[in-house]
Image (cartoon, rainbow, N blue to C red; front, side, top):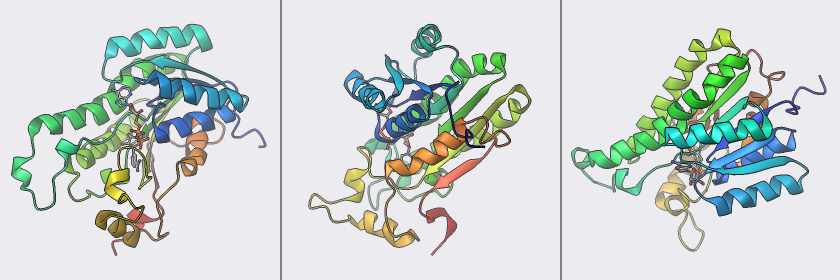
Length: 269
Ligand SMILES: NC(=O)c1ccc[n+]([C@@H]2O[C@H](COP(=O)([O-])OP(=O)(O)OC[C@H]3O[C@@H](n4cnc5c(N)ncnc54)[C@H](O)[C@@H]3O)[C@@H](O)[C@H]2O)c1
């Protein structure tokens, strides 16, 4: 029981580990013993996270890859295999919204640009789950051992105002999670999603805070609707990702979408 959360035998791939939430998840997996491959497009941020993991006594390496490019993911998969062995944990944390796909206050939904909608679906659904699950999932199925963790969003459960394309894309990520969970349930691969609520990060800080640090109108509305009356901190995602990655701790858990949102999705008031 004491070893429930040890990940010493796991090779974890964290796509978007260059970002704020994915980077923290990579650190958590490294701290529990996984060899961590951080994938992303920004070597500076990726290498910085690798150093943090190493300073804490973990093993990690950065690999430049584009989640939307199958060839790039396949090439990197081969290198990781040679460096660390067969990946057994996949965290799909590449994703985010596009300003052009967000409706300004009072804007007409009918004018939402299709290009922006498609970009957001490509990033969150195709690069943020589909392609990496196909490319890394194949080896997991062959090894009959794996855990795929998709980072969806609370907005995929409750469509938020204005961010319509992002919410719809994350809803699709949750649906794909459930599909794949059933598809691979007897093949040793578990597939789950984490749906964070609001965690201030590069992609949403301007939406939540004014320059003087006070809440924007939208930030204030969110806090008013959150039973815990605060935003989340990236470290609050560490426990759930380690739990879902650990075959011992979550062996009978698949097809779940875990909301980490201070209670936001639990109330309509
Ligand atoms: N921050 C929040 O409040 C919040 C809430 C719910 C869900 N999420 C989701 O969590 C995930 C991580 O978000 P974050 O807040 O850490 O954002 P972030 O922007 O800090 O991290 C996303 C990372 O993905 C990388 N990325 C983007 N496109 C890529 C591509 N094609 N190939 C490889 N890497 C790519 C980015 O460069 C970035 O490093 C995203 O899927 C986001 O939608 C975030």
